[in-house]
Image (cartoon, rainbow, N blue to C red; front, side, top):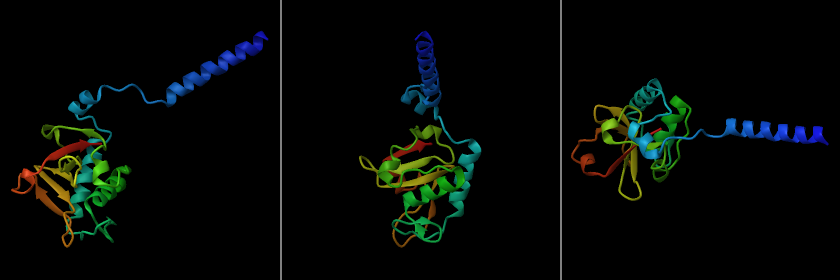
Length: 164
């Protein structure tokens, strides 16, 4: 009986230890992590995302598109670039992208971060590539293009920034 009790105790202790190994470690508060611009991507991956996005400038816009051959909508462009360059599959819709990664302030933007436009339910998104510019797939009949956050149109839009 005593041996059985010891084996049960040992089994429970091992299970608890293994469960601890498989769980997510405690994290800092989300506001602290967001304020520090914590990223799961290396600087090299983030730069690669930006470079690849710029290489897709000129690709036709297509609603629901998510490959260079079929064309892109804004979230399809983001998904394609993140998946092909960092192995990360972001959510498919702009509304879902608004919860992807961590919120960061504009002052901490770096290449590869997301710019998300719209108050309440977001309506558009792109990939920040540095120097106040972002790549996005803007609208039917257009192509993927590089724009400035300080342009007359985009500077008037409510903008949020996310980092994975």
